[in-house]
Length: 394
Image (cartoon, rainbow, N blue to C red):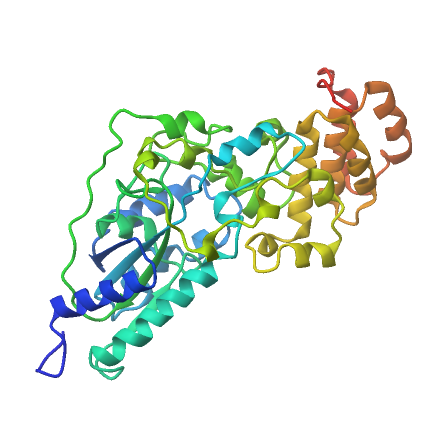
């Protein structure tokens, strides 16, 4: 606790933090006590026990630290939860109709928000600590969502919004479009009241999910979520989900975009959060041709680069297979020789969707003996699939 005339009162410290946050462009802010989310730990353990985290191995590995902020930093008393609106200036689902192009999640169309938010949090901390008594009296730590901190429940506890049925934070003022950051401190700051749930009977977000990733309201099975499948998941995308992925090549905004509370969202994003024009709906043919150096240059400073070119090409090939455009078949055919088996397998699936059966059979005659068992199985399944070839457009 702050003591003596040299130091700010808890209320003044909170006011200063909020003023600094507004100067950095944050749209929403609130304070949560470090012990504000006791129900989050058992829910997390149950979710992991069900296997709903998929192959995100870091989730069970960090579960105990993630269960409570004090498990990560015993001195923490308060968390300053901050939100930055990144609402798009158009409906991102419009890109889904452009089947020869890729749909990229809104958050990934510009620079990596992790670095942007972290820089803002560090500047707030560096200005706050000296005015609040100095580092010998005030300790702070900053977190973006790469740290084992449960930002969404904490943000709800701090009054920024509530966790909607899609499990993401929803704000009455900002809708479903908020980047979250946190400043943890050993100060006892006045907490804000949590926001109550305003979802009511609405299930727009649940019904919008293309892969039925919500087994129930407020529960998500990551193994079926397009964002997980196209970003976190290693290896082939499950065959039964590929068609539903459509042309989503990095993430999915459907459940967020469907939220009725978005109509109250006030935009006004900084230019640094604006989408790069080349990431709004890039041509699949162009993306399929990127070599490693071109991929890294094309997505420099983008979160897309962190997932790597292999997963990205896998996603592009699934989108090509869903495009119905026969003119994209040569791009998939060229990737049958790729060094990575996941890419080759996705190319097989795409070609089976685009080529007439006789043409695909001729191609299989020279390629079906792939040394990788998974790719060989893709050939076998494609050759025995009797489903009709989708209508194509040259």
